[in-house]
Length: 304
Image (cartoon, rainbow, N blue to C red; front, top):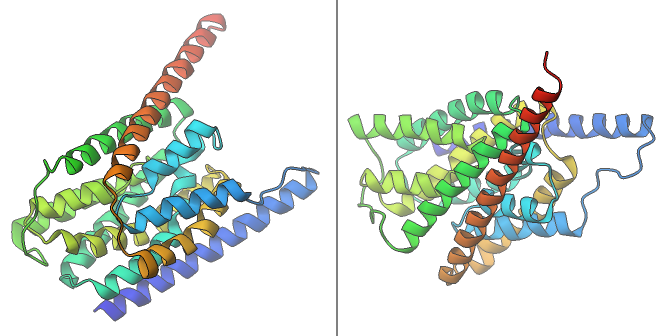
């Protein structure tokens, strides 16, 4: 069954890649017609962010919260474009992670497939909604999601989360709960909150071996991100330059972490990530408050 899963993932990867390449070519043609000068070629900073975030993502820290922090603190991507840029730019590195971890980590394949399918459904529905949200809604959604991610990270660091059991798969009620929750987590991915930490918490609460969470969470992301990303590409709700940087830097970051580094003492890094994510969440919510204030002022100044 793993072979069939790999074939399906390869097909999804090919479809996503073709659609994105066509969108990139169309965007560049439009810029040439408009005689634009700044282009879409990612710079060293864009690529470095992709490398660093996907390097630590492969080691289990997650990439969405850290990438959001870089984008917000350095003002690289407009707030309303961050969810789409995260999903599109991290898609191919996440697919590479999925191929690696599904191949080497033992997990019950029916459980894996059902949880992946649920996350894809959630991602499709979520992306269809978020890709049409106004800026202030995305700011509120991302700010709240980042605070939630920081809390989960801190709880994990303090070992307040369940340690998990020895199960490699789920059945009955536990499986139904896992599928339903993973669908919700797939929808949250489109707002910009990563799936890794909450998925790890979910499978641990249900008695699974935490190691089995790696192919589940990486497989879920690998399938749902291309599907959700197509919605953002269609709506043009992302930053092409930054997304390309995440991909170009992310692939070598994944390979280095998976095959050369494999593990690091990451306690201090995780606490730094928690602090940065909290700061970014506060900035995002502050931006949302300013945005809503401007909208109210405009409504008062120009009543219909």
